[in-house]
Amino acid sequence: MQSYDVIIFGAGAAGMFCAIEAGRRGRRVALIDHAKAPGEKIRISGGGRCNFTNLDIRPERFLSQNPRFARSALSRYTQHDFIARVDAAGIAWHEKALGQLFCDGSAREIIAMLCKDMAEVGVELKLATRIEDVQHSDGFTVRTSAGELHAPKLVVATGGKSIPKMGASGLGYQLATRFGMDLTETRPALVPLTFTSEQLDEMKPLAGLSVSASVCCGTIAFREGLLFTHRGLSGPSILQISSYWREGEAIDINLAPDVDIAAALAAEKQQRGKQSVSVALSAHLPEKLARQIVARSGLVGNLADQPKARLQALARDVSAWRVRPVGTEGYRTAEVTLGGVDTRGLDSRTMESRSLPGLHFIGEVVDVTGWLGGYNFQWAWSSGWVAGQAV
Ligand code: FDA
Image 1 (cartoon, rainbow, N blue to C red):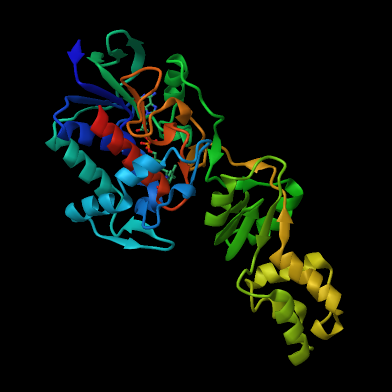
Image 2: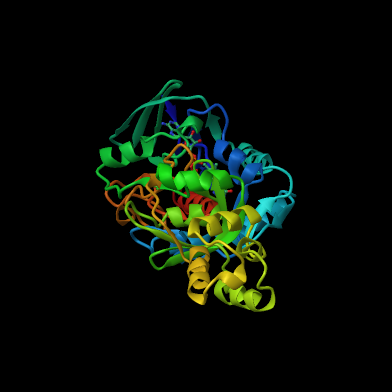
């Protein structure tokens, strides 16, 4: 039996960060993962450049059944703390848009920084190790494919269900349930939306086109890129809204939010009435998209031929396009899992279970889900850091 102060399950962003902090405090830490390499999601994140945090982290940009829960961790370990860490490691970065910070070089630099920090404080990283059983009595005894381990503290950082191909498993949820904790409903989030075959017939020919759009569901709206794909709609604005959208709901899309299309078409009609409607519309939209919208509306002839009401109706097709997705692409492509370990069962200052002292949950397995744009890694760093101070 190998004995430690802390055993951590999951060598992702949250688990590694917690391991480093606990190690710095002199704790003997074992970090176990069934994957062959640590930080696999960091490696593929942000298109290989890791959007590691956001300059504009705010608690209200995280979804949870208990929206106040994330405040404590996010304020105790902030984006500025992590940026200072990245700077100290000599990793060059840039702001891409909306406060999103990416490595100039590669996401692997973040993994290398974390691995170096773990090695310095003596974290024992046990990769390609299967977790076979966990028992609790006088601490936690863990049976693994590499033998038995024991520690008074257990931190679960096994992430969510997204991208099962990359090692996602339901272990964290199973352990939570097994130790008497509640779960909130889980569902894929930050995920492309899917449509009926009829809707797809319209979208497929536009695959590859992107526009800066405003996408709204209920009272929530995002103004970011929208991408037409062979499977439906994607791009940042769609991924963002997917976290709020529920089956049966419609989303409202403004494909040209910077322009009053009705006014623009009316002005064009005055000045260049002989222009075709689709040419006039393509001043504000990609040409192929403009042509399709005009064709769908049934308008024929040039601008001068169109009564005001018909141009206004066309403008609504652009600025108030209402679509009803049928679903999402699911965990296969979702960036994150919404929901998870119910935060009412956790102490927000330590991430420790209220019902079983010594047991902690951090990162994505917890019912805290950030917006797209570096928010989810910041939650992993912040929740990992606070648990690392407590274990
Ligand atoms: P994470 O999933 O990273 O780690 C969990 C670890 O537990 C894994 O190493 C896994 O192998 C291990 N594990 C699971 N089950 C186990 C078991 N049964 N036994 C042993 N080990 C087990 N976020 C962001 O802020 N900026 C970005 O740029 C991106 N980009 C991005 C791209 C893509 C394609 C995806 C899928 C996701 C993102 N994200 C993101 C989201 C981000 O990756 C995610 O929120 C964090 O990785 C969560 O960190 P955790 O450490 O909680 O889980």
